[in-house]
Image (cartoon, rainbow, N blue to C red):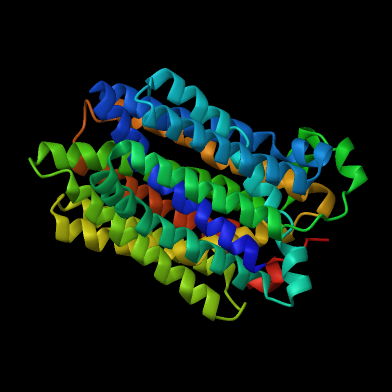
Length: 395
């Protein structure tokens, strides 16, 4: 369990560093913001695509094989990118293709590791909710430290040296996973499962169906805020782009705090009320951003948004790991994950167009109202039970 947590933390640290380093490196090499955005955007698109097929890959080749293949593919990809930068031949198209090669198995690898968290927690005699909370805590630490570390390393070593640092961390993550991940017994019946059975399970589950639907909208809202609305609001206000960093850093601190609360608490969370309260707090954060893009307001909004996200994320992860029967677990996680993430590109296109006809303040206020409506829907749709009770499969 310790090795899996180390690997998770290192892998996410490398991802967050790469988001800064690769984009900055391509920008320096080409002077093109479009290419810098393409490198990062293609990574996300391929990640979502790979996540959709994760369950089928795990059923066919086994969780350990998929997890190790993904970790080593990411490590190899980062090593090739570092070699290109060190050789002074970082063609943006090649970097995009190599990055996509590493990302295609990143989603399946993550699900392949986490799909066996219930068994890992049982063997380690550790509470599953607390394991997911610790995992999320490391993720939030990586989100907080990764971009800053990436920026510092770029300044100190230049883009080439910084990409080499990312490759080194990715290699350590792959080694940690190879050392720690057990070879669990494969479930033969999983090979006969198809998307139809998985969707039927999701449609019939009184907890996972509303969570999947609600989270897809919330994730879409905040992707639009972070990548479209907030940068435009900061730009139009004539502020330095570092103002956006205030929101992101405060959000990471809030999420870290929330995950720590979950890790140190019991399992008596009332899921319906916690999710509804989280959406209401996210609406409050969006309202705060609508007041203006000044750094103190953005920092306050970031913390208000990050805190409930940090509390809810490990609870949701625990439910998606424990409610499906083991034969369906990997497919449920992969398809639900793809459905949640798949709303992001739609939101980016939609809100990108809306920014041409409406102000950032108007859109943020509309999102705040939408989040309050989602809170009311969560109260009406989710069953009344605690996290421990809801974690048990229905029927």
